[in-house]
Amino acid sequence: MIRVDDVTKDYGAFRAVDGISLEIRQGEILGLLGPNGAGKTTTLKMLTGYFPPTSGEIYYDDVPVSTQPLEIKKRIGYLPESAPLYPNMLVYDFLCYTADVRGIPKASRLGRIKEMASLCSLTDIMDKPIGELSKGLKQRVGLAYAMISDPEILVLDEPTSGLDPNQIVEIRKIIRDIGETRTIIFSTHILSEAEATCDRIAIVHKGKIVADGTTDAIRSNGNGRSTLRMDLKGATPQEAKQLLSGVNGVTDVAVSEKKENRCEVSVGFTKGQDAREAVYGAVKATDWVLMNFAMEANSLETIFRNLTKET
Image 1 (cartoon, one colour):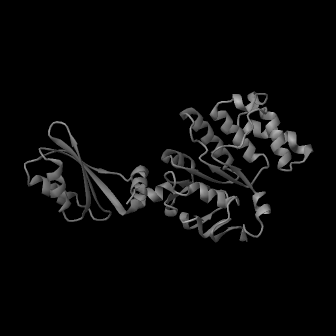
Image 2 (cartoon, one colour; image 1 turned 45 degrees about the horizontal axis):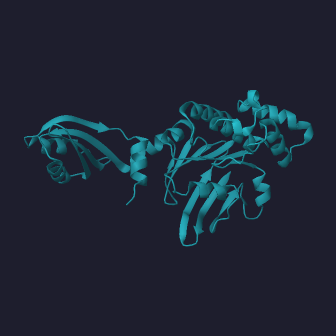
Image 3 (cartoon, rainbow, N blue to C red; image 1 turned 90 degrees about the vertical axis):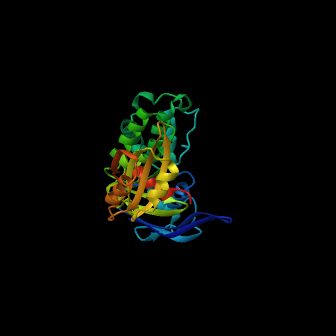
């Protein structure tokens, strides 16, 4: 449905998005996951036609955005990170105004506003000024604003940013409900958000996509790495790192010092190359005491850190 073909975006000498290619299927909830400054917002603004790419092209059903920007924008509901709300307007008046701007016929306008009020749980606050609402309620109003024209594609930039845990759960449920009938693309830097809400995630780092797939697939691939956790008693961090770094199959060793002459060790090695026996043998040959020895399952958090760490 949506195809991003080798898209870049430059701001002077700075390249915010660097050759992204991506296909987004109809009815999919796709999360753009990455640290702050990774290029997520710039990518969303190009997807919605607000920014033209420096190079490359974005297609909606094989139609380039650059050739029919207005027609394609009519198919999209967009909620930026800072929702464009008018604090002095009542919620009902704001949705009426939005419906008018989006060209919804008067005959169906009231019905559409009521539908959005129900979907976004706004019915009890329709007569409240937007400026008096909590951030969570404002975000619900923003979702209603983005959905008022019944778009087939919804683009959300950090929709749960700054919300408390209860509000996050509420917004997450609304997104899942909306996603049953629409294509949704949203950005986040919160791992749990992507895992709980998305059918698929694309991890973005320094303007590039460094992983793309379901959370299970990305976790399974694990960037080709497994991690072994140990607690050693009687070893200094320097001694532990020196010994274990020389073990065949080990790619890296991280050591942190703990109390009582103990250190915590993380040993990374290439997936498919089980170095546990060799590591155990190396420790056994010393007079150190092995207090803990366990393989860490690939977590999305660990993979995210590995893929987006600064080099």
